[in-house]
Amino acid sequence: MKENDHLQAQLALQKVQSFGAVAARYIVCGLFIALIALLATSGELVSAFDAPIPMPAELGLK
Image 1 (spheres, rainbow, N blue to C red):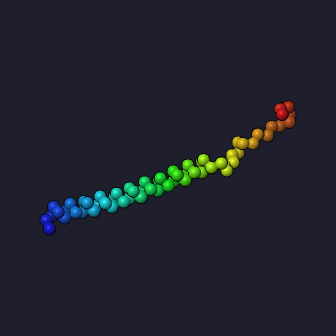
Image 2 (cartoon, helix red, strand yellow):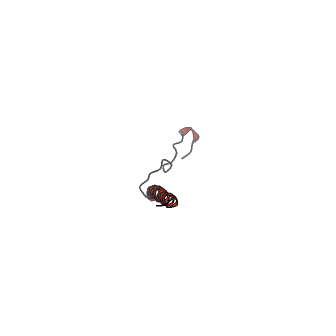
Image 3 (tube, helix red, strand yellow):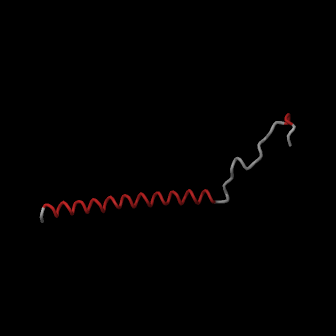
């Protein structure tokens, strides 16, 4: 095996390993975005701003 062939084989192996890490990162990020989208679009979320603000009686507002 020539020195050049060995070097090319090592570079090809590094590209495969780095592609695996990039693919794993994309999968994890995609799952995170999908989870946030599912939580944001579910109708069961209750906000603190849905109820009216309690006002003091001295203001005379109803």
